[in-house]
Length: 229
Image (cartoon, rainbow, N blue to C red):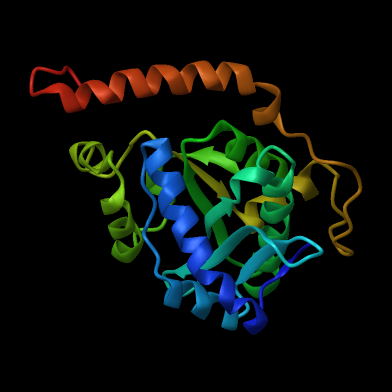
């Protein structure tokens, strides 16, 4: 079951934060470290989604963060328990947290940073597009969260304009305007007239090759001052 987390889920906070840290170490990348108290606060605010089994075992989690007074929103901390990975839980959680974000912040741009192609594919299906870092939030508190990542020195070397992560953004205003232009959305009713295409997903293999090249080139930055990048 995937649902909005409540105060009844506070006892999962320790398990969630432990798995976040373990998974980040296993991947060799970092995410903003969060304490159980922070996760509990998100649950109490109604800004988190949790997945549990029928016998109340924890399966997965994700939460909402708002930046620049709600101008930007991030769906952060996506984590799935190891035994449930590859089962489609991540997609279900992302869909639910996206829906919750749209309900709570209907005018906000929703963005994320990720190195995972699976997450990029999920985001693309929801309407995100790959963007440059200049189109993301400038809130210093958000970027400070990257300090726990092993690639933080690359982000600094690139003056926060690029890194191994790909920035993805959903802009509700752009989405609506595009849908109206293409006849997918009723201008007055706002009803969706036909399914939107997702070109990113169609070219995932090409993008995967580009990501490998990007990682190869950028990791060269860490080898020394003689790197051409």
